[in-house]
Image 1 (tube, rainbow, N blue to C red):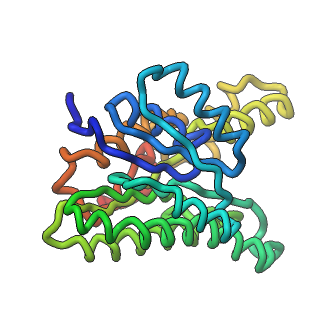
Image 2: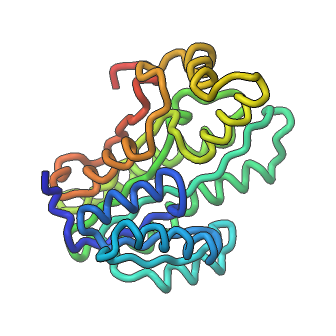
Length: 264
């Protein structure tokens, strides 16, 4: 299927690994000019090198910026070209007891996970409205609904992203711009791979056995009963970034393998 994305320009925050990197590949495959982002020049250069090997004729560039650093953010916004598709993907988390997590940890996660999308959208949305076309996607999480007790701060930021996305969508009424959010579930990113490897070594089991136990004991509500691949998540986001998804606006799309309850 032709998603009619050829020639569009996208920026993906936090895209040197995981879902963001998979999304960069998915968009490049559709002919999108992609700007990736990571915290260091080294991580950006390494990711660009990998992308260029797979897409030798693709148009791509990268900008290093740490979303905890206000000066980095200013530099990033000044360096960005015209952007048609903004993917607010950057995210950090810390798993810790509510009674132990300090204010600084709450503020840090809010600064990166929430304010990154606020600042990028504030800069890019007006230009999209002027051109009467654009896509903004917030990559939230199933944790916005599931809310694990040891990830309250992270879950709070992911819920906040849903509210921001819904509110920004109201500003696009009658235009060709849409703003949506997606809620990935347990995804086999590099972090999940490390978790499986660590637990397998600790428990004397295979990675497959640890994964099976995780969904049997911890994520029991999952219908998929396995980790989603980063590509499976990226493909859905790519579609929502396309002109074919014009009728989807102000929505929160689950890519969680059926792990969250409720009809909606």
